Structure formats: structure tokens, C-alpha cells
Length: 217
Image (cartoon, rainbow, N blue to C red; front, side):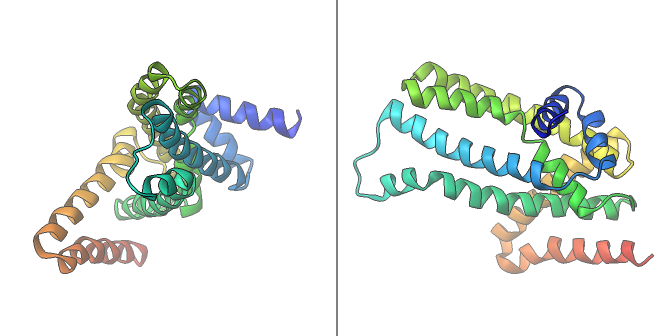
């Protein structure tokens, strides 16, 4: 099997049998290059095509040069935000898993899992591309409808992968992948809105203390 065929097979398998596909990735000791490449390409495509398809359908606002600058650099802006989110999200997943007592798995494996879980958004990106090419309201609406569906599919893939990485039950994997990070972010936003920066530090410091407490036990 050629490298291209192997890559296409692994990506396709991820959509229908994520646990098996990710097991092959871990067992084969594949590098981070494929999941990171997929994540970066999709981040650039989604942000760029979303902005350009909306502009193609609705037109660019004629209010100074800022909208045109944002439109021109939408892909780069999207990648910057996506990479920042990727690092934060992977760190939260790994720290929460450790706090819950799951000592198997590594940060790099969690990074691969989150990056691979973006694969379903390729359908959204394709639809946005059609909306941009044909300046089509219909394809733009389809893209926006696909976005939450692809996100749910991505979460399903991630839950399966996290369960494999940290040797956890599906229930615990749901908490590690979704409920735990969501709770942390909501609590951080609420505390920051009430007390400012000191409030933001409370959940951050608490997570760090719990993490190192677990690591040293």
C-alpha cells in the first residue's frame, strides 16, 4: 500500500470506526505530521472559505479598509485562533485525565486525537467551497447546517479516541473530552467577569495544584 493510499485509508477509517483507526495510529507509532496537517488545512479552509463565501453571497461591507483586510487574512487569523485553542483544549483534556487518576496516555497522543477529530469538518469545508465558487445561498446555508452536525461527529470521534488513550470508560471519556473542559471554561469566564484577573487565576491554579498532586502520588 502506497503512502497516499495508507493516509486515505486511515482518514476514511477514522470517520466510520474511530477507535480502531486511532489504535492503528498509536500501535504503528505514526508521527504527528498527518493529524497536525489535517487540523491546519481544515482550520485555514474553514475560516477562509466561510469569510469569502459570505462575502461572495452578501457582498463585502463598504466601511473602510478593515473588512477587506480581515477577508484577505481570514485564513491566517483562523489558523492562529485554532492553534491557540488546540493547545488549550489538549492541555485541559490531559490535565483532567490525570486528575481523574488516568496515568496512561500522553499529551502528544491527546494532541493527535483532537487534531484527527476535526476530519468531519472536511464536509463543511467542501460545502463552503461550493458556496464561494458559485456564490450560492443554498450551499452557504447547507454549510452552516453542517457545522453543528460535524461538531457532534467530531466529539463522538474524540470521545472514542480519549477512551483509548487514557484507558477510560465512555462515561469518563465524555467528562474528560467535553464536560470537564466546558466546566473549566465556564467557571473561568464567570469568575473573570465577577472579579477580573484574580478570579481567572482561581481555576487555573486549582488545576495546576491538583495535576501535580496526582503526578507526585
